[in-house]
Image (cartoon, rainbow, N blue to C red; front, side, top):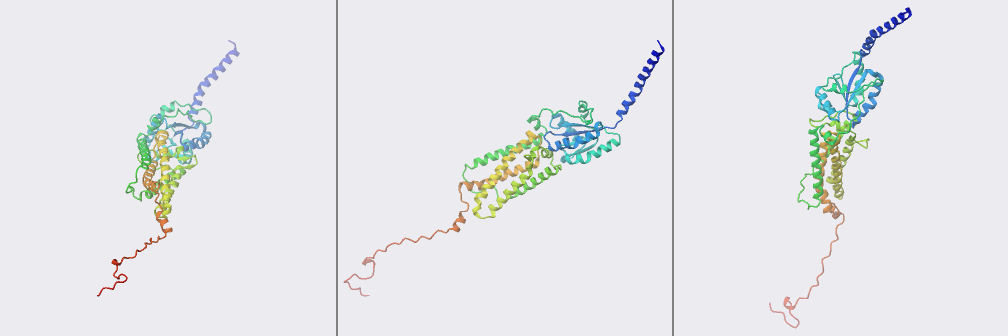
Amino acid sequence: MSKTTKSLLTFLLILLAAAFVFAPAQAQGDSDQPVVRAVLFYSPTCPHCEKVIQQVLPPLLEQYGEQLRIVAINTTTEKGSDLFQTAIDQFNIEKERQGVPFLVIEDTVLVGEREIPEQFPGLIEEALASGGTNWPAIPGLADVVATVHFSAGPTGRAIQENPAPPSMKERFMLDPVGNTVSVLTLIGMIIAVGWVIYSFTRPLPEKDFWPNWVIPVLSVLGIGVAFYLTYVETSGTEAICGPVGDCNTVQASPYATLFGVLPVGLLGIIGYALILGAWAIYTWGDTKWQWITAVSIWGMSFFGVLFSIYLTFLEPFVIGATCMWCISSAIFQTVILLAATPPAKRAWQEDDFGEEDDEDEEEPEEEEPPQIEAESPTPEETDEPASGEEPPNK
C-alpha cells in the first residue's frame, strides 16, 4: 500500500471517527432545545374554537416553530369526548368552565376565546425560559400523541384530520343525562302544541284555568334568561350552568346565532318584550284592542314554541349538549302559549271583545211606544145616563 493511499485512508478514518463523536453531541443539542407542548380540545361546530384555531394559534406556531407543539382533539368523537372528560376530572375543572375551546399547557387550563389569546403567549415564554414542558398529565393522552406526526416545518404543529361526523346516537351519548332532559322537554312541547290546536275545536270553558299574572311573570323571567344568554354569547364569557347539561358547548355552537349575526338570546329578548307589551295593552288598554292583542300574544307564543322545538331538537341530536337556560326559556314559552290560548280562542269563537265600547259610543235611539186607539166605552161601563134618561137620584 502506497504512502498516499495510507494517508487518504487515515484521513477518512479520522472523519468517520469525528462523525461518531460529534453526531451524538449534535443530536443531544437538538433534544436540549426547549419545547412547549399543549393540548387543545375543540368542537368542529364551535365558532369560538374556529377563531382560536384560525386566528390565535397560527401566529404563535409560526413564531415559535418546532418549539411549540399542539395536539388538537375533537370532542365530538367518542374517544375525544372521553379524553376531554378525563382532563376535566384530572384538573378538577368547575362546571361553568367545562366548555371548548379548552387548552391545557402543563398544569394550567385556559378556557374560551378570551383566556387563550390573553394568557397563552405569556405562558409559552415562561415555559421556554424554564426549559420547556412535557405533555399535560392527562391519562390516555400519551396514546394519542404517539399516533400524531409532527411536521418538520416552521409551524411545528400537529394536524389531525377531522373524522367522519358522529351519528345522532353518538352525539346524544356525549351528555346522556342532559340530553335526556332535552328530549323530555321536546316531547312535552310537541304534546302542548297538539293540545292547543285540538282545543280550538272544543267549546269554551266556563272559567279560565290560568291566572292573568302567569304571562307577565314568565315574560319577565324569559327576558332575564335571554339577556344572560345574549351577554354570554356576545362577550365570550363562560356560562354558569347547573349540575346537568353543558351550556358553554351550546353557546359556542353556530346555532347560538341566527344567520350567523343575531344572537338567539337577543331574539328572545325582543319576543318576550313584545308579549309583555301586548299583555299590558290587553289588560289595561282600551277594550277595542283586546281582540287583536289576545290573538297577537297567542301568535307570538305559538311561533316561540315552534322555534324552541327546533332549538331543543338541535341540542341532543346535533350539538350533543344541553343548555338548561335554553330549556328554561322553552318551558316559559310553552306555558305562555297555554295561558294565552283561552283568550285567543274566545276572540275567534265569540268575537265579543270591544262590544261594551261600541255600546257607549253609539247609543240606540229610543223607540216610541206604539199608540193604541182607545175604544168608546158603552153606557153600561160609564156612570153617565144614556140620552133621554134621567140621572138616578142620589
